Length: 191
Image (tube, rainbow, N blue to C red; front, side, top):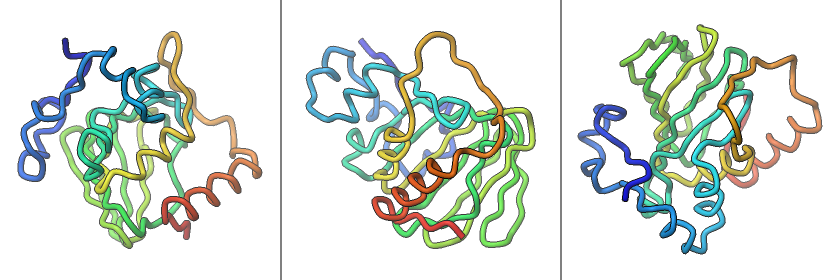
């Protein structure tokens, strides 16, 4: 029985860079629980995870792709965007499903609407802004180790999925912890 599967409906834009979606289908929940990975156990307990006032689900974990990539479907509110930053190790590709987003990739501005994809290469400063009340988008992370950050700084979603706009800036202690962890463990530099 398949619990979740990455389909061409979500990722037609991936056709030329990954094997067919059928190679990345999740097995039944019992098989997931049998694995020893903490990340897989967390994922199996909650398909959705709360993050930055929204939520996400993993479509492909690094474990499912031998670490080559991670694919995450995210729903975030306006105001939950990251500051300008760069990744030493990962490229990111964003594919907008709903809403509108404005991207700054190395100083170049680009607006993305449903059906648009934007590529942010490693070692290049980038950020995005959600221009609608919320946005649903797919993030492809290559290689996939940064996925662990999203697991680490999220919580399993319970009950009805909800999106809450930020009520102000996060506490300074949380910002310091987050930026320190991103820098030390994941090679992300905030500019």
